[in-house]
Image (cartoon, rainbow, N blue to C red; front, top):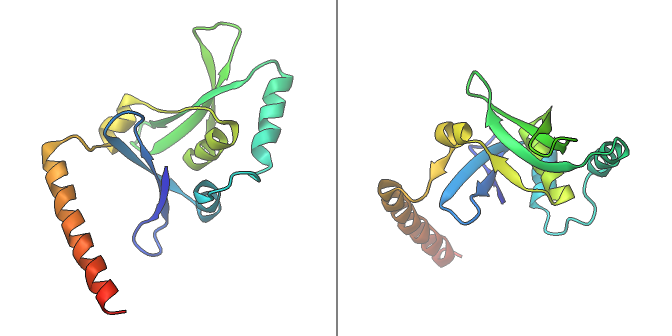
Length: 152
């Protein structure tokens, strides 16, 4: 995961890479969550995540994973999946996408994305046309970096 700035004044996004695959997903995050997620040392995460985990544990459950999804209007949404008495089911607790990322990082649980989200918002880095565009962008960026270095 990496945190990137979008156009100035329009916010930050957490860039998630598919585990073992070419997919990429950009999740909007606020400044506070962006700082937390981009910190190299995660020793002092937010106090609310362990508190939430302790409350869930007190009820005899556990956070299994977080799920990123889309709502009926195509907006990004998220939930934390809690363990239940029935192993085949889990209880979904709605949360914001940025809170889901912070919770997943704090508790060390997986982040899952639904196929609907990937279809609407995802970016498949395996597509040939996209690979070609990425190579072009890399050449442009390499040229800019070289020009900036020579002007120092």
